[in-house]
Image (cartoon, helix red, strand yellow):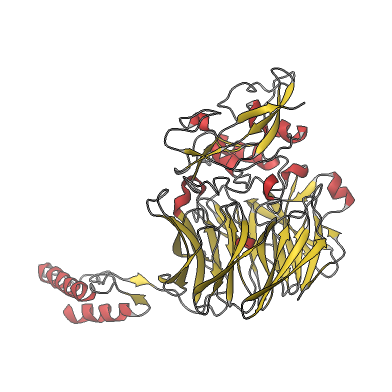
Length: 408
Length: 174
């Protein structure tokens, strides 16, 4: 029995990691255990083979690389226990739960490096759980092992808010990580991901969030509807331009949940009006707006809602919106249908009925995209074909209070 | 509020026992540790607050109820359910230095009042009597009018851990 057992041990090493320092002990225990079992076995008729994991070492899984385009990170701020933020990785094709990140207090969401090697995660910790010294860091995780591979200390000012994509973003050249601060003074923390050092803090009084707009540029939106354009290109030197009041606020304001296609950010108002904002260099131009709803649909109370209420497929040039019926004050309510629009014609091309309520949606970036949906009050992740709209599967018990969905 | 009715129904059927009133309201998608000084829209209020046959809010004077008149713009765990009251933080917590206000109508005397929703900070979420009266909120671009920020932010003593929310009267309107 010893020889086959040893062969199993060796083959099991592939694709898995073992805890350092325990390997020798594990080998010894595994072999001795198998030997004991073998010697104790009574003589007699031939028995079925032992389970394949007999004598197996303690092992830790690693993720295949590169990441599948059909994976999704379900970020969770765990509202009833906010010190225990998490992010959950799920394979949309198989429905398999792949792994977890544990990400600290009032968690927003992670950012994936474009080369697929790293996961960047702005996190907040207290030395005594919910009290004591506050420490904010960007934790860098190895995307294959999900181990912390590095840590960058940042000012303890990271915003604690309902998680939205604008809380943290990477410039298009992947050099700078931008983190929204609110204490309650507003600023952007800039972290150099090449040198892995905190670079600077940029005050943005009266404005909020970071929306990338170029290799080393981004913009923030101000409460009066103006936009501040910030360029980091010149040796880290900040060049800023402040526009007029170009985005609608007040009675029917744009939400802080836009989606991007190239140079255009698509904002949506409480009443379902799409406001495209084209940002190039130091210019920001609002293109003609259009509505997600017809007059008849508006009369029936149809409007967008949710937390991550819009998604986009750049390849298909389609916009997805969570829709529900309600008055203006229901602008954050979840919906049980997703309406799909052709971004060129602005026409609704599809209605996707959902199996359950959704407050966040995401569409994968490949040519045969999946549509993911979660509801902040439910633990399950639903997966749909983003082209046909057909429901594919439900992954049960993924998160406690799922917020923002992120795909590779 | 069809979704709210649906969840309530689901909960009543026992399919989702975890879906309490607290978690249902949490599903509004708002952290709402801040809120705004705009009275509730009648339609939205009607959707959330149970009414008697004559249209009155039966819990308007119950401080432990989400339907209490002062809670017109609150979002969070009611401190009255957490060891404090609508004016007092629970033991061991710290009242936020930064606050947000609402303007609420008191059916008892027919007057409108400015209500200050100071958060109590420094411990993990109380988890009791979640109350979300979301109407009138603005996007986080307008920070002073948004209910999606944690207003324990900026508290110098306890920092950002959020525990519960009070509802203190600052004064009468007009």
